Amino acid sequence: MADFIGAQRSNYVMFKPEKLKEVQEYLEQFGVDVSPHSEQPELHCLLASIYSEGMFTTQTFDEDDKEIELEMKWVAEQMMEGQVLVIMMAGYEKLRYILGGAEAWNWKGESVYLCLSDIYKKAAEEFQVDVDSITDCSY
Image (cartoon, rainbow, N blue to C red; front, side):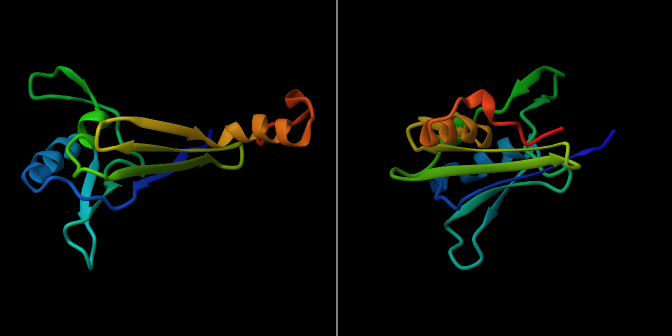
């Protein structure tokens, strides 16, 4: 059995200055580093920490051993007005399968998501073929 290898990160956005430390502490619990841009330090991106094997952890436990889930809606609401956070992820297990997706969040906490596997439906519609006639990129 092969190991899953993944990578996940975001674009650079501006958080409310008074909320930045709180966002950093919150995301640290989930293996997510909030990293400043090298030339524009007011902008920050989200990166999977070296301890999270390339992907954001979506669940963890608090100090009382209570399970908590990553709330990206809350994180997004800490951004400055007009900001849009885009998070991309991709991963694979040898060549057995490749997966990926992206989500975008605005400062109001609204989101949209797309998945690489949506290409099958899009290709079927565009090329006017039955979606079931397109084989999966997996074995």
